[in-house]
Amino acid sequence: MSKRKPVFNVHCHLLNFRFVPDKMTKLLAHIPEDIADDDWFGVAAGFLFNVIPGPRYNRIRSFLKTYKKSIHKVAQDYVKKSMKNARIDICVPLMMDLEQASREPKDVNVPYYRGNGESQISLISEQVRRFPWRVFPFIMFDPRRQDADKICIDALRNKGFIGIKMYPALGYSPSCRVLKKTSPAAAVRLGNLYKYCGDNQVPITAHASVGGAYSTERDSNRELDVWPLTEVSNWIDPILEHNLKINFAHLGGNYMHDTDSKRVQSATWRRQILNLIARSRNEKGFGTVFSDISFHDMALGGDKRRYFRELITLMKNSDYSPGILFGTDSSMISHTWSESDYIKPFRKYLPPKMQTRIFCDNPTSFLFDNARIPDAYVKFLKSRLGDPLPEKDWIIKKNGKYYIVT
Ligand SMILES: [Zn+2]
Image 1 (cartoon, rainbow, N blue to C red):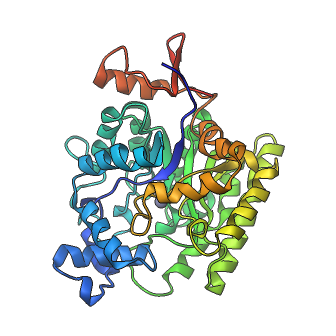
Image 2 (cartoon, helix red, strand yellow; image 1 turned 90 degrees about the vertical axis):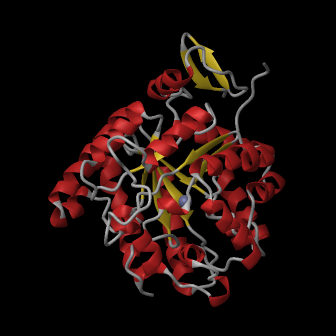
Image 3 (cartoon, rainbow, N blue to C red; image 1 turned 30 degrees about the vertical axis):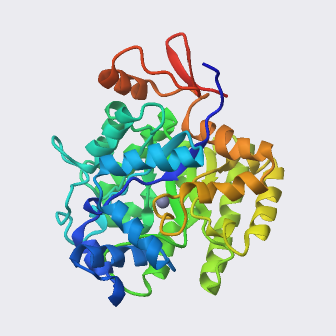
């Protein structure tokens, strides 16, 4: 088998509507009359219209149909169709624990976590076994959840997860010092998780954009309210204290946004994230900072020439080029674009060497330690698939250990 480097998508989601708390969708519901066919469809549309601005009607209909499928089918379609068409080899699904942001946390169809039996965590864990060497999921950590630290560490050790997703905008500070003031128990869990991640160099992806999902409380000032929780500077203490390997998702968001406040805020975060990327490579002990460029609709719209000019300028700068990661944010983008639509301009406008960096080399260094697949992941695969494990073009085996081709 001829070996080659893989193409990564470091930011996607495997979701359906059974993964979203009812209360949250209902509170968020802003349902355009003509889309509200029946109950679930209205609720679904309400949720989506809040997460995703300006979608197109027909595409959203088929998009919503996807969300009605079982997670097995969602994953099957994503890996076998979307990734195949886009020539993406490896995906990193990020889990979403929305229960802590819901007023009635028990109001969910499939619980995020359950000791035994079906849960969102068990369902995503199964996709690792179904698609070996292709699906490398991150588990979401919300410090407000009881035993969140233990649940996440167990998932990393025993369930095929390789990293942590955090989403402070759902209602907590990622700084132990700040969180301690309102919730000492949550701050302890947060500290435990950071320590584990730092000690084992487990990658963390943190939401860092002006857009996104928030809490169940619905009001128009909500976005402004949660921005302080998303502040990039909140992370300086944890990075310094635990030498974290961290990806700031979305690089601040759409910095060409036509709303003044969003444009200013995302441009500010973008600058701050880039400074952290550079600092982490020039200062020992300041972690390893990355940023993914998922949900950058600028790359596909009227601003695309400016977008790629500026991305190329970044990639020419050796302070930043090792830190930029490719991601799409599927299925959050699939109301408008397929995976192959999304990756197309990156293949067209970026020089090949820069493509290799953001599609392969940088994701490999973010996700793995010297390209080595974590033993826990390999053990999890073997426990389900036996030994020897199936071969893949982008995996090599050396002295019993498995590596990404570099
Ligand atoms: Zn996302």
